[in-house]
Structures are given as structure tokens and as C-alpha cells.
Length: 458
Length: 153
Image (cartoon, chains in turn brown, green):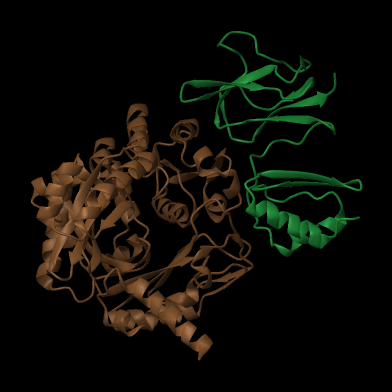
């Protein structure tokens, strides 16, 4: 059925991003906003805004019943969950299924299948997708046997974790029993699920993920990969496509693996299969699947020319995949820098407040996804993402050059941001060479700290 | 002592950083009511406004709009959650309250349904119902004015 009205159960730039596509498609939007977001840019641009609760996410954006009631109350045909908040909560997808509201995303069963990281791992193995050596362990004895077989360093991961949460590194086998117990207890209190599993810890790895679209009936296309290795504490900072310095063979195998995995689940909607690329072994392993639209989706849109939100909506309407694999063309290179309201000089401490002035770059090959303008407030209750600056050019050097200009043209007053920090990273020779591992940013920060100390004492 | 504009700005800053949503302060007859998340704090005197002025207010939609009160001094009963508002316990039964009804703090004035879960809404103040704004069976938003009371015994 054709969707006529969508309830957007999110805030910030992604709410605005969904509104933009809905407008282009002639679909009405109703924004479900907390009290703190009633004067936000998405609230102004949505056709209607309903106040769902107080500022605290637990009282508003995370209330499944309230969101579905709001959709029913405003007679929305569908809910777009964005990313974060309820986007990967099977309970929302299931309640939508029960209430005949279209959930713009995968089925509840698919969210559950990938949310349980051990189950996702088993699905990957069944699909013939490589996983890091390791597996489920229920007792310390089992862990010791498996740990000896895999070898150290090891990673203990929470079954209900993901996105870097609930992991513990173990360097010596004799530390495994105590680390296991601690990890189990922590996972129990953090996720309400104490189960953990073991995997080989990859010392030097790159985070490469593949964007897919699935029709829900087993047809899957891939829209290429994104390299998200520039991370700090598992928070991605810069993403790009194509992944630099990757052999054509490895790239093709990763694309194929993502399609296999999503096909195995008969995945519906847009999703991302994350891989860890082991630089020492030149191998890649399945990490997890993200069952939602991702923050960094615009780099894929830039090189393919495909509007991922529009495809999500078309699939949700039951129109299936509108493109064949041979229709997907990738042109040039795209890079995204996440501009956050956080202070690099104060260990990236988030700094909410009022943006006195905001000037964003524009021009050929420059896209800015943001909900921030002069006078916008950044409430302290939510994440610090202010904007995503995306550039697109014929090749990586040209894209880097374009990004430098875009960042230089950006002006934000009133709150501390990481804008200038991005310029420093862009100027780094290792980053410029391309293909950095996930240890790059921590090393970069450490070098910077040492330099500053030397200068202070020199 | 009197409150200066700088004091107010400092108090607002502290509130921003605190875990509280609102703050009421009375010093030397100057009342200050601050609320986090509301579009514009309403300081009682002109002298106490600069803090708000220095922050350009974003234009646009404010909390759920409702028609202005028919007389000054009315107390508002606001919706504690988003849901479907019902004026009566069951369809066909008389409403909990009508215009002219006298209510006490714990008088139930309506029900808000959230996915089949019924939540009673209480008056929260003593008085007489003057206006009923929320429609029976309609969606009400969080913080929307459901009805207005003339405070009193």
C-alpha cells in the first residue's frame, strides 16, 4: 500500500533527513518529539509535531507504547524509527505488526536474529560468511578450552552487546576465568542478559561495512562498502567509500558475504553488515549486522545516487527492490565528517548549549545533514551529533581537498565542536595515505598529547 | 539583595547542568520560575530577562497549542502523557466532570489510554471547572491543557 503519512520516531538530523525524502515523495510527516525538541528544526519542518513526553529519552523517545499510540492517534500509516532510540528494538516492530502500522525497517524476527550477537554469528557461519575464531562459552571450563584453541589475545563479548559495548580484552589465558565472570556480571546488569562468547582479538583491524537493501523475500543488493576505521572508543568520526587500499578481490568477497548473510535472513529494508578486516592475516570476519539506516549512509548515497530512505519506504510499501545489482553504479569517492558538540581539548567532553551562529558549507559535491542553525539549542539529554558534512569527488585526493574547504567554510559559535580536530586528522600523512586501522585515532591522539607536553616543557 | 541579570544567567546555567526540570526561587519579592525545555523561561521582571535575550530564540512551534483562557487566574490541568483522552469511565456513561463541577486535588477528571492501558488523570488542585479543552476520544499530547479550573475551595 502507498504510505501517505509517516510518524518519525526520532530527532535531530536523521528526523530532518527523513522529512526531506518524505517531502520529495509527497508523504506527510508527523514528528514525535520530546518537550525539549518542540522548537527544533525538524519540529518546524514536519507537517505536524506531537509532544510525546518529557526531555528524558526514557520518558519519551524510548516509550514503545507511546510511539505506537501516537502513530495510531495521528492516523499515520507507518513509523520511521531512524537510528538509535527504538530503531533496533524488536518490541516496537512487533507492536507495529500487531497494530497494522507499517514499521519502516526489518521484521521483529530479523531484529531479534541480529540483536542476539551469538545467533547472528551462527547465522553467518551457516551462510558461509567468515567469522573470527571463537564461539559460545557457558562455563569457565569451556572458555579455557576454547581460549587455548583460539589463542590470546582474546575478546569476551556480550551476546546482547554490539556497537562496541560489552567487550573485554584478555591478554593472558590465566586471566580468562576472572575476566569471564566480570564480563558476565557486567553484561547481566547492562543488558539483562549475562551470556558471553569468545573471539580472537584482532590487533590491527579495519572496520569495513557493507550497505545492503533486501526486499524481505530473499532478494538482496549491495550498495558497496564504507570504511569507518577512524573511531574513538567505538564512536565513528570519519567514514568513507570506497574503502581505500583494499584489493579488488577482498572487496568483492566482502560484498558477496554481506549479500549472503542478509539473504540468509531474507532481510527486509536497509541494513549494514559490519566486518572486521584483519590486517595481519588479510582476512575478514563478520562482526554484526545493523538493522537500521545508519548515520553514515550519505556517503553511499553520494557515490550511488540512490536515496536509501526512499528505498526503505518503497520496500515498506511492499514494492520490493526497485533496482537490480547491475543498476547499482558507484561513482567516485565520498567522505563524511561528523561534527559533534564536544571539546577535543577536554577529552571530547560533550558541551550542550545554544549555538550562537552556525554557517555550513555548500557547493558542488558538498552535502550537509544537520538540524542546527543559528539559535538552535543542543539539549543535554541526547547525543552530541550536530551535523554530518559529506563531500563527493572523482577520487580520494579530490574528496579530501573538498572536505578541507568544506570544514574551513564551516563556522560554529557558542558551543565547542570537533571541527578543527577534523582538519588535523585530514592533514595526517597516515590518514592521507588511506586504509588506517581502528588504532589510528588513539595513536594520533597520543602523539598529539606527547607533542603538547614536549612543547609545554621545551 | 536583588537578582541581577548575571545572577539569573548563572542560575539558568546551573539548572541546565542539573538533573532538575524546573526551579522556583523567591528572593526579596522577586519570583523566578525557570523550566527546562520550555521555549522561553518567563522571568517576572524586565530586569531579569537579559539571559534569555542573549540566546536567540529559535522560531517555530511551541508546546501543544491551546486556546487562550477565558478569564485570568485560571489553573490548568495538563496531560501527563500522550494518549487518547476519555471524559467518561465508559462509553455512554456520564463524564467525570462538566463545566461547573467542583473538584479536589485527587478528583479524577478523565482517562488517558496508551495502547489499551488506562491512566487516570487527577485535577491536582481544588476549584471549579471553567473550561474543558480536550475532546473525548481525541489524541492529547504530553503537556497539553486538558481543562482549566478557577482555583478555590
